[in-house]
Length: 292
Image (cartoon, rainbow, N blue to C red):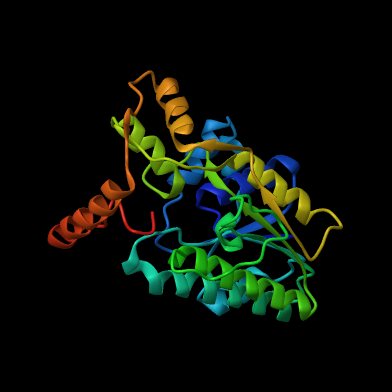
């Protein structure tokens, strides 16, 4: 039996789908306030509504230890996907609470519940920045800089909890996905790029990053969990693209005009400050921050 956290999110939903299609027995953690609509729509997207109806949901939270203890009963493996993805400065404490403390709770309960192996969804951000060549691989070590986002720091420290549990007896495996794209909620996480481009985004920034299909992330982690591989990490990346190339491809798919205005460093510095003031006045979350 496998216990899955974060099953209502983009990656978690695809992991539940992969487990369902493989015929694996599992339980999925959901918060009492969480909507199942994203997960259900993802299953519908792959014509798997019948599999969605069979999911065994457990109500709880990664910061609610009794619910974790109940959920992990009779489970030999855990897939920990639950996390907050945010680049809002105001969410720093939430990132710490869920990503770091929540991961510590999952590892501690796994250790005390007799779980044998844990698979963890981290992020390429947890490996830091390679300032020399710009290429990050599994051998990179996180070096703190003033450019680190609160999200990157939270995933790095979450990883430390996983490695710590590994030293205490758990078999662990970590995947570090690049920017994850796939069918899901356009108002959350990296999928917001689809909404922004569909709404007529006119600007693009210089630089590049890695992108990966959410299906590849989910399938990779499930395969690693079910394998004999342990105490290793794996970067999961589909392609490295310039931001403009990625934006252009999405625009072409939507059959809408491409972004044509290049954002200069000066314009970026001005833009995030203006957006910060706007969000403060309106009491809303900033669409652009220094971290993004």
